[in-house]
Image 1 (cartoon, rainbow, N blue to C red):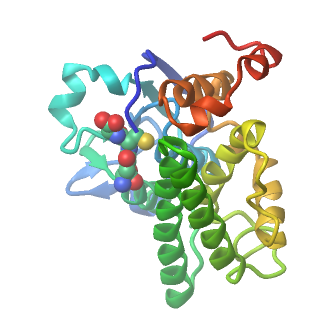
Image 2: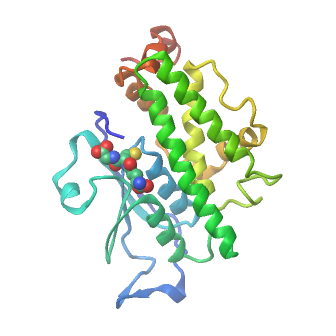
Length: 263
Ligand SMILES: N[C@@H](CCC(=O)N[C@@H](CS)C(=O)NCC(=O)O)C(=O)O
């Protein structure tokens, strides 16, 4: 996601640590409660949100640095192999790719957010990848230049939710009543719809009651709520408007006024 919203700021998270004692050395280096972990972030990035949610769920003290992706700082360009966020700076070096960062954060702390069973864990990882394809479809929707493409993307998203529906059982979250790693992926996905539904009358969840319930459950999770800044929605709407897409046209001046958002 590239955009032109300026958003440089750093925020320290000073929650109490829970670094796993039996995993404090790696390549001769120690990971301790005092170790500096810095997450390089972008305010609107759903992949960043995954890492933020895991950091929060596992109560990992860290520093969060927000950068402007349309004007990447030189220091970021130097350390980021793909020029993408999230990027995690640790005492041992830099990690990139949200899934990798999440796994690392899970492994250096007490307990795990993944299921113990190898197949079940692998199944979750498969559906995490699936989640990334939903994000791609959402980007396709908000970038669609015309009504026809918009409708096609809408159909792709609804079909993906139908596939997801078939995976969900009676549990509160994806596959358990406690929050797991995979739930950090679906929280940020569903968050988009809180904004999209302000402007799109088509229902995305009509045929998928379990997905709908899962969405509601995730929307109440503190780590999910706190994974974005307070001005997230107005920033997202500004971003959507600047796309100059079919959706941008649906965001009427009247609605913006009602939301107290200036263009
Ligand atoms: N597969 C990557 C995707 C990360 C990604 O696409 N990040 C976007 C922001 S949401 C980015 O940094 N894009 C670079 C740019 O816009 O220049 C991950 O899971 O971390």
